[in-house]
Image (tube, one colour):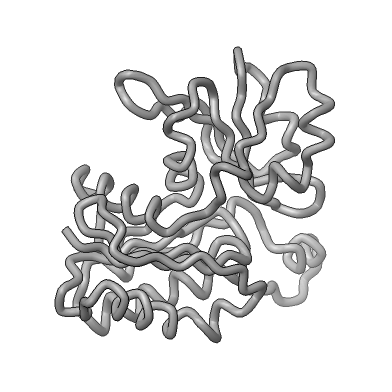
Amino acid sequence: MKILAGDTSTSINTVAVCDSGRILAETFVDCGRGHAERLLDTVDWALAEAHLTFDDIDALAISAGPGSFTGLRVGVATWKGLAFGKNLPLVAVPTLDAMARLAGLYRGAVLPLLDARMGEVFGAAYRFGPDGRMKLTEDRACPVEELFVGLEGRVGVFGPGAERYRERILALRRPADFLTSAVPAPRAWAVAAEGASLLEQGVSTDPAAAAPVYLRKSQPEEADKGTPEGRHEQ
């Protein structure tokens, strides 16, 4: 199965074309807030590098959150447009589940962490074993310290949130391994792999049902909370 996958949940613009787990082409570029300007061009480049067209693609997969509000909106909207325009199934992939795949060889609990600003992270805890991946917590927006509660043994942390709050993580009284240098995150091939797994499980592929997952309101919405005036769209 050939999958075109993307992740715009952070400043990293990453697009991949994968075929049954094999990476045919992938980008990994820090574009700041430039996702809207470069995403479709990146898709065209990835397809060209893979020597494919949309006629060869079987499904689309997009990282749906949590993450950057603007980035998620751009990614999901773009992939929905492609799904409708090319009549392709679309899988909305939980961002942290896809990121966890990047640390599948680590023996211990793993915490993929995104910077949620306001002193918090988006994160979840996972553990890999003989039976595959087990999710230990739900996706959360919280202080990084809260994600360590109840975890035993060594913990591997990675992602932009791990680097942003490195000192706070190091101050915790339990061992933590920083995997960020060996596990750059996010990666579109992981979104493709997670998307393929979800397809096997029979998840919805209706593009109309795909929507970003924010976990909390945007900063403007939080500022407007309790006021009668209009709300800001996420």
